[in-house]
Length: 320
Length: 320
Image (cartoon, rainbow over all chains, first blue to last red; front, side, top):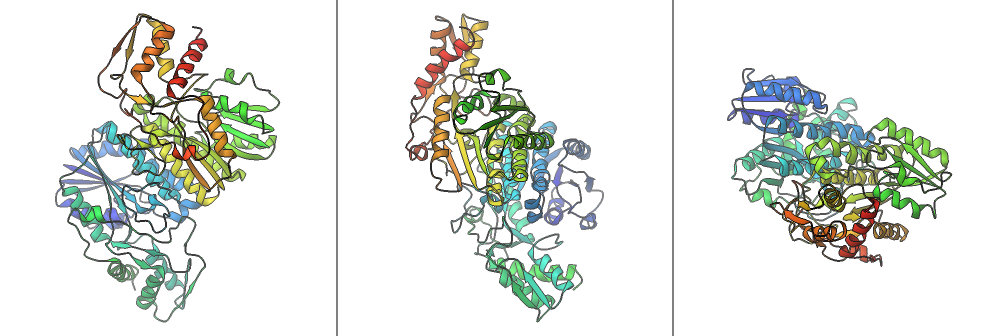
């Protein structure tokens, strides 16, 4: 049996492969390696982990990649993790999220239908909720007002997947990711801070006033949660689950302080204005994980623990 | 001042022009006339109603059309009514709604930003709600599970518009349309039934068992509701309003009987199976119009009155 991992060359995808190898005979990774990296995949056995370099935002490349994947055996499922991961870049140019976050989803669905693949696991995002203030963000909340093009195109992807559920998919898991940290880091606040401190070890300039509070999950916990949900007997054809830690998160200020302590002790931290890092940033999340907990799952690390571990891991990744 | 009406050559757009002419100096209609029709616009003065033939699903055609529209004066607003209107066609080929329902929205937003236009009125749809059974469909309900590609791409459009509200739009009206009837009819159950009876006057074959119940609004009431909401002092930057009659609607069986009575008395009506006309059809709506009523607006015709009038109008349109 074959599992396809779209975006499998990226941060989360490359971590997922290890677990999937235990049960699938073959893993086919499809990635354009714009943000992913072939080096992330070096450690996997080449006779079972197959890499197809293709840009899934193009219908013809997507279909060709799926046809190639089918050569390795019957495709039982698709993990769709391909997306833009640079939210501010997507706000400047909406075509980035149109192509990398939405058209990838659209084309994958067309190819799945053509190939008769009926099981989809999709990496959605807490960004679909937008800025709902202090409201508890549970999976059934409305209305959804995404405020970034990234969030909008993740919601658009979910919408198209729901319609595909009516038409041909038999099982759908929508995982709404929180901020995920760990290695190999390709983006995100920790990598950003460490890179800044490598360039100017004496000071760290933070976007926004540092009071933004978000929850963080370590990538090892994220993978474990997704596999737990996939392994459970599905209650419904479409399962939508927020994945995140059980705590309320940590502030950007706290993260900045921990990074300075680890990488460049004594560096002065200065802050910007406002509680948003950029247009489309959401200052505070109150993320419900009740449904996730109903699967009997709990993370090994809370937000602070995940960030602390990731700071150390990313510092090592950068040779510090 | 100039108003742009994207999709202004279609059923609803061509009805809207008449009212807009009272207040805007110039109306610029942008349409690809795939489902719209130039004949619908013959009655309007050519010195004030300008027609640009362009396919808004292509970024370059969209931008060129907006630049051309700007020649007539300062553009104060965009009415975006361009979309696929053949839902079953979009279910067979998802690229139809991708292009005609979503990419039109995406490109219009890019062009509005470039041209500095900050006011958008968008024709969304009750199809974004999907099949939520007997639940009352109010504007803030969640979760939204559209079950047609049309509904998915309308929801995707809303999502992208919300993100644009964060980035550059100052005022957004999202009108969630019900089933709208009237002339010039281009699609829909009444036109379909009359055409069938013209072909075979002795019998009418209905998709589904006829128990599907939906509410219908006459196009004259729809236009009046949109203008009422646009004219009111906005309470919020983004207003999302369900538009529809205040009743619970009529069944497909009742419509079939009225059409037979008007067009081909005595024709035998036969029914299919199931309470869906097609995959992606929603058997029953319970549509909240509470927010609409808070604007002090009420329709002149209920569902039965709107359908009865439209049957007569469409029969006349077809020379019967």
